[in-house]
Image 1: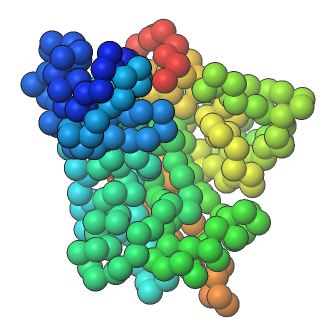
Image 2: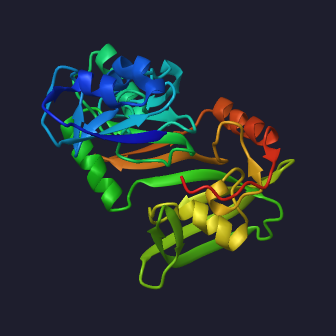
Image 3: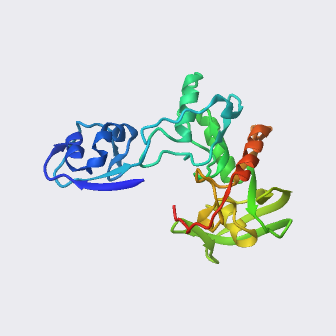
Length: 299
């Protein structure tokens, strides 16, 4: 993604300002950039080309290929649904939320479109989240009461997550419980005695061509917790360039999959598991990984 800053020299309609000052190679894409929500004034997303931009106002423009796409969630990616909540599959490299360059190409947009098409009049937000390169299950409420209760359960650590992670060989331990304190600085997590407590359990499950696959259970939900714990105490997750993996996937994903939840809500306990077909897809992806020693990319 590229970001540009332009300053209005006089009161000017936004569309004209972009036509005059945006680099030439992007001027044919102005309508798409605006429709995608890639133009900002401070924390305000600007969508109308006729909006008047005042003299000396600074405008930020976020540009990336295909940013005017819309994410439409395949119906088969709805893994569980009842009257109160649904659990859906997020592919790797898809953001859970809107990003500065796009309003419509992210998981939450796809879920809200699905709800609208199935007659649910509620604009939902995710209860759980996954990093962009991670694939797997995400929980959404279908009405305000359910959303509040699910957020409460998540805050109290009563919603349990289960992951699969493919770690580079050798990853010597068959079972390890990691408890430490970590902080996230400049988008990368590291040990910090003054940081937040983090607690993960790794259990070896199977050996594949390029990796050892672990089940991972998290008892806290810190940023990059599994990714850092794998890297520091065992070996990097396949494809995780941020944590020095020697492998890379063509689409920039990493071999980390959120594949199950235990959700206790209103007297019932729901066990939601990823379909076997998506487990097989995860294993097939591991077989397609390329051996490479890229430089560490902070992104």
